[in-house]
Image 1 (cartoon, helix red, strand yellow):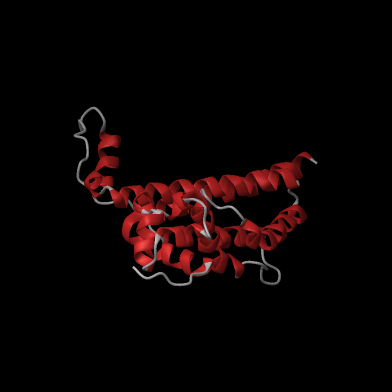
Image 2: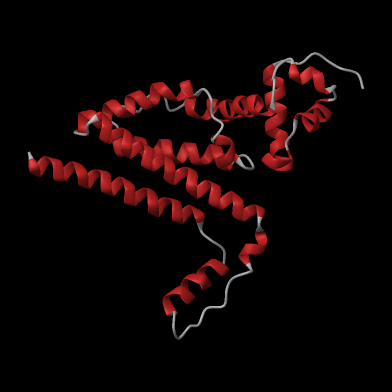
Length: 214
């Protein structure tokens, strides 16, 4: 097999495309080398291990999408901006197979720092302490990641959509109703929006409580 000159962006871009075909567990440096038409050692010149490759892939996955969120529009509300960032992060992870799991390998999120710094400033100006603003953002981040991973794991296990437990309607009518909803397919968009709304509402309420106490 003839080797050809590679650069890190080419390797990472090909790896992200391959990820959609084989998933995170099926991705290996050997498989990637075959996809690129090179010998394995050619990749090790750029990435010493699969872990190094995954870090670069996670960084690249977010770079282009998050760059557009570096600055909020004039007179933007902190909640609107946090919601916009949340949708962008979720959209990025859902655009790649196992994108939620890949996000855990994010190594250099510096492209997100300008927008995050401005968001923290907006929340501080609205009345949050920097610590409480960070906790709020962390909570939103956990919600995004959890719902994305749940959705992508379910997509990988379609049998779970039909393999629902039999629930005694007489004893557990509410659980039976929930199971029936799940058997029709989970509405992950609705679940995500519901949870995000609750978190944002809770953050707004905490500001109202703080203003009453002072």
